[in-house]
Length: 414
Image 1 (cartoon, rainbow, N blue to C red):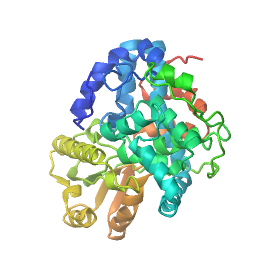
Image 2 (image 1 turned 90 degrees about the vertical axis):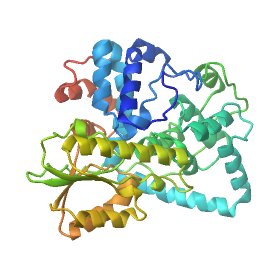
Image 3 (image 1 turned 30 degrees about the vertical axis):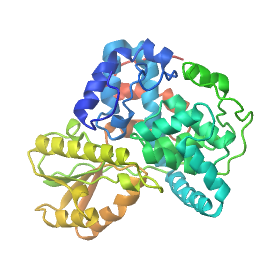
Image 4 (image 1 turned 180 degrees about the vertical axis):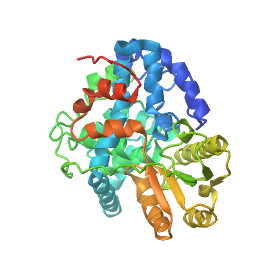
């Protein structure tokens, strides 16, 4: 098993996928919630950093699970892959929740400057100096590796909120500072879920016994909160309509990539008339407190890898705008040198990349470019089922996969 995410490339993503494919069936279903520590974890895929940047697509991973294990044995693994899809679609229907998180993070960060006691408690938490067994280890592991097992993330967030009584958005921001798979939808909505905001009135309260079991006996924290406290936060607004994606232009175009989709060659035909490819990543916009070097490097490396593959696929030159001193200006300079007036951009979901790129795309349009935002069939097929709770989507997984041609007659587990 590859132990670290040290190469942010599609080649390593495929290697990891092939290594974990034999474990995507009953082994995963029975052991997925157990975190045996950094030297183990053969029971979970650790593919999330690659999926986040779409160095691998969800469809590729689901196809691998079905090929190796079949419908019934693979379904639990497929369900977990679809959680990420659910969160992405849910936030796309409710972009105001992302804006609320950003505003809350700013106001809670301001409290740290005014309240010395709060700042002391916050710094003890992010440094792993609270004295809470497990929590301190996870804080250090996150900072050192950029990764945490999913159950550790849930327990960490619960202890942060209900035992340490720290502000929720600052915890979400701490995760985004370090996680290689940091995602605006999954991270924001997972923290809201633990807090009892995503599913109103149903917070997740970490228990010592559950942590003992799920940490494989490594941790047994005492004096955890025995009841949740009320967390202030915005209620879920009604879903908005997701804007339809644009079709590909029927004429020559340039391609602009972001970190939200870095395997473009897997879904756009090599014979398309592409003039040039450029890329821009926005990792430094992820959080308020400064993004870790590891997270920046992973995103930058993935962009370079995705650009190189796209340029090779279409046989055109590549331009890494993020390597320029002023990337925003470099984007406008690049567009000014194009011989075409159409620019295709793989869809940028709600989050910091869209916040950063939306004004630039408007600028390109104001200068006479036609900007086409295209979207993968996977998202278009699943997102209409993400307006409510996850279990509404789960019921649709078999039929959606069938419609996508990934599986026929996939059975649920009830």
